[in-house]
Amino acid sequence: MTLSADGSRAGRSPRRGLSMRAGRRLWLAIFLAPAVVLFAAFVTYPILSALAYSLYSWEGIGRRGFAGLGNFIRLFTTFPYPRLLANAFGNNVIVFILTMLVQNLTGLGLALILARNPWGARAYRAIFFLPVTLSLVIVGFLWALFLNPVFGVVNKTMGIMGLGALARPWLGEPGIALITLTLINAWRWLGFPTIVFLAGINAVPEDYLEAARLDGASEWDVTRRIIFPLLAPAVTIIVILTFIGSFNWFELPYVVQGVSGAPNRATDVLGLLFYRTAFGEVDTGLQDIGVGSAIAVLMFIMLVTVSTVGAVFLRRREVEMG
Amino acid sequence: MSGRSRWMPLIQAILIANAVLVLAPMVFMGLSAFKTTREIFQHPLGLPAVWSLDNFSRVWVEARFARYIQNSVMVTAASLALILAFGAMAGYALGRFRFRGNDFLYLYFLSGLMLPIRLAIIPLFIQMRNLNLLDTLWSLILIYAASGLPSAIFILTGFFRTLPADLDSAARIDGAGEWTIFARVMLPLVRPALVIVTVYNLIPIWNDFFFPLVFIQSDHLKTLPLGMTAFFGQYYTDWATLFAGLTLAAIPVVALYVVLSQHFIRGLTAGAVKG
Figure 1 (tube, rainbow over the protein chains, first blue to last red):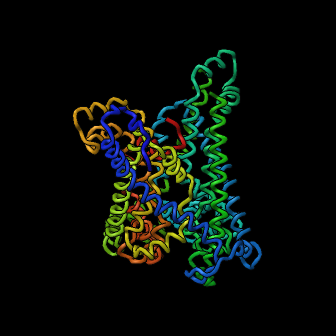
Figure 2 (figure 1 turned 90 degrees about the vertical axis):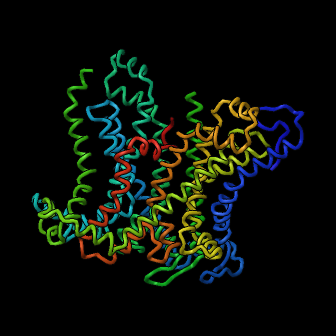
């Protein structure tokens, strides 16, 4: 790293000469070095290595020869990988869509309500956000106990309410296990989109709303024609974060359903598949660091693309809005 | 607004229903922690017949929760100390000095905001093994500190930039050294940013399960989230103990949240909410 001649932004007399410039340079190095070294060693280097790993063949934890795209070809053509990949990817997509529909729409509704500043709004805000701070391990285990088919409080309560016929093993039935898991996740996260949307609504200038109301616009018109369009940046952020979150799913299915995504891989997602392929499957003993790295690279490309496109989209909207 | 009062009962009903949905599971968890397992099965919804702390003491001693919590505190505190110290130093250099490579370094750190570091777990595992750091708390501290730096540098550089330019020149004329200017003059002025950085990183680090799962083997080194899974495997039929464990695990964060909820809400949504 080299200093430009003008030195600090604060400015100083140019005559004080070289020794000071060298001293400044040394200080800058001292200030920057710890962060640069730590970040390079434990973020940049591992991520570049992860990309490189996918291009080699592996035996256990030992690297063998260069494999080109061999790992990717294996992932897409060699049993059982294509089926596992498609199943996990499909489950991630379902989680994303369901989260958008259930969690984020509910969050938007709650934000619209809270923005009207009802009695107790601050307290409600704090309560709704509380689960966001809880560990997903706690949340997962807690709901696993509640949803236990025999002893769980959910089915018991349904029985008391005369809904016993609807009681079922919520986490054990392949058709509904993933939906149940997504709802548990939504219970934990709901406060987050609520706060983001609420901040977006509160940022809408009060004059706009007043002017529209004076012109005789109904509350629904105000919401639809003024608030919703101005909420676009918040929506973009929530869509991006939901996408990243849905495709990074790991803790919740791991804790509640186990590393194989029980029942019968109905809750298997890319995060679990990646972990099993990298560190060894419990049931089959299958471990393949090459194929695991290929999965990581694909997820990496997908996530980085979405966040980049999202960021560019956001930036452009902001420019348009001035 | 005339429409306002008409809808208020409905609005309150919705808000109360959602508050109950959020709080009921936690209240139920807390109550069950005082019951016996038989009581949980027979009277799941009632109050405990006897308010006994037996479950908690079993969790604290037998299930090693004291140890797990201690490990979590150490890992979180050490990671945050590194993030704050190194992040502030780098943010100060990037925000206050013009030098060739400034923009490049800033963007270099910022790139880390988008990189999902968990996907590099295989190289990280091998790297930690080669450094003899596997199954140590240092493996966690280093990875949390490194991956926490981009957001810290982003937030702190922005804050340092907004401070007036004469501040450091005045201190320099007074003959203060570079380190004194940084630590005594500038750092106290960015305290609000340090709070945001702390909150933004505190909860994700405290709650992280993924890296301990991969790096930590020894039971006495497990952090709370990882220790919980061992605990659940061991006591899976003893629901009273399980609920006590869950309650105990939730208490530190919930207690902190009750005191600092506004900071938490602002800190955890920083990045998604402007201003």
